[in-house]
Length: 464
Image (cartoon, rainbow, N blue to C red):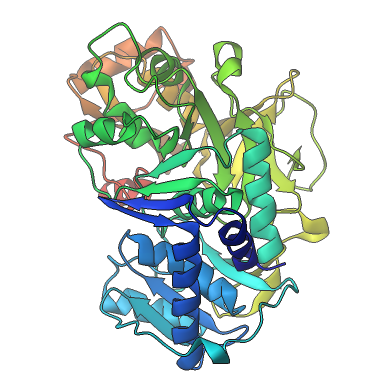
C-alpha cells in the first residue's frame, strides 16, 4: 500500500471537508491532495525517486505535514530532522542515513510539471526512518514501511477511538514521533488536524484546546503538569475534549488522577516508542484502579516480559519488555548506516523494564540501563521518583545511580520545587525501604530537558 493513496481517496470522497487548520487558514482534502501532488512533482523534478531518502527539517506548518505525504507519494523515504539542530548535527544525519536531499524552510518549492509524476506504487516499501527522541550524531533508525505506519494508525483508532469525525490539535513538533504520528493518523482516518506551533505557554495551550471544534489532543507529562495551577473551578479545564492523550514518558498515578479531576476526564495513556510504535493503552475508565500502569497491550500487539535469556517470566516479576505486531519495524539502520534485523521473531525491545500484573495491565519499572544496583540489590528509579512526587513541595524529580567503590552505586535524587532538600531523607524513611532512600539529594530550579520535553538524565549524570 501507499499512504498517499489514502489521502487521494479522501480527496475524491470528501473534497470539501477540512483537513488542516493553521491560524486563520483552512485546507480541505481536495486542496491538500493538490499540494501533495505539487510537492511530489517538485521532488521528482529534483531527482528524487523510489527509495531515495529525503530529510525534512522544517518548523510546524502545513507544508511540513504535506511534505510527509509528498515523499510517500513517490515512494521515497522520510528522514525526520529537527529544524533546531545545528548544521553539524544535520550533516551527521545526512551522512548516517545517506540523505539525498534536505528540505527546510528556506527551500523554494516551486510549481513543477505533474505530467511526469509516476503512478502511485501500491507495493509496500520503506517510508520512514524513525529515530528515537532527541537523537543526534550518528543514530540508529528503525525502517518503517507504509504498511507498518498504517497499522500503527489502525491500532490508535481501535484502542483510543478517535477517527474521521475528530479534530486533533497538534501542539508538539512533527520531528518527534507523537506529533508526526498523530497528525498523519488523523488525516489517514479522514479527520482534521489543527496545527498549533510550539512552544506555547499554559494559557495559550488552554485557549487552543478549549475551541469548540477541537475534540482531541496529545500532551506530554511535562506540559500537563504546567496546567494544574490554572484550574480554578469545579469542572475540568478541558472538559470539551473527547480524547486527551498522554505519552512520551510515564505519568505517575497521583498525577494521572489529578489530571482526571482538574484537566480532562477523558484521559488516555498511550505507551509507545518512536521506533516500534504503540505498545499499550490505559483507557479513561481504567485509571481509577490501574493509574500506576500503562494499560494493556494495544490492538494486534503482543507484549512479553522476559529475562536476560529471553525466557518469559511470571506475572509480578520484573523483566525486559518486548513486543511485536504488524506496526512494529523489524529492521533498522545501525550507526554506520548498515541494515540490521531488529530482533529474533519480530520482537522489538524498547529498553524498558516492566512487570505484568495479574489483571493483564503492564507496570513500568524503569529503563534497563537506568537500573540502580546498590549492594547487589536492583532499585528502579521510577519507584523512588513516584514516592518523592507525593511531596507537596516537589514539582519535578529525577533519580539516577552514581558509581560507588563500596556499594557499586548509590542513589542520587534531583528535585525542583518549593522544598528544603535537607528534609527529604527523613520524609522518605516513612515511605521507602532503607536501601531505596537516596543517599544524595540536590535541588535545582528546573531539571534539564531534552528537546522532546523529557528529563535529560545524562545531563544530570554529567553534573554528578
